[in-house]
Image (cartoon, rainbow, N blue to C red; front, top):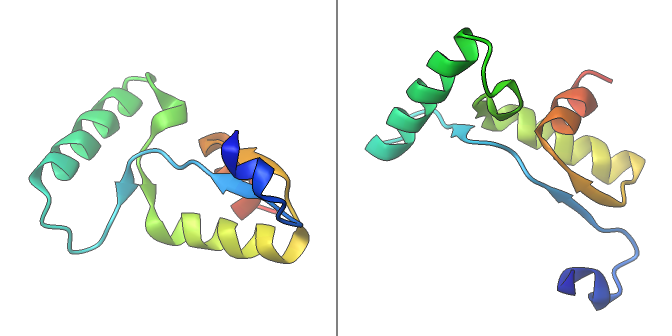
Length: 83
């Protein structure tokens, strides 16, 4: 990964799934979240359930305070929030 070669003391990449953003006017985003939520209700694509932006922000604050090296996928983002 090219970013890792930049020599930062700490590097944590947060890779959330589709984001739930308040007040969005992006039709495709709304449709994608609705489709994913439907499949989630059926028990499918649970790792890719839409995530509110405040959850991502909470995770980013937590890893900035506690340290992190690597890439955080959706399940790890949810888990970081629950710590």
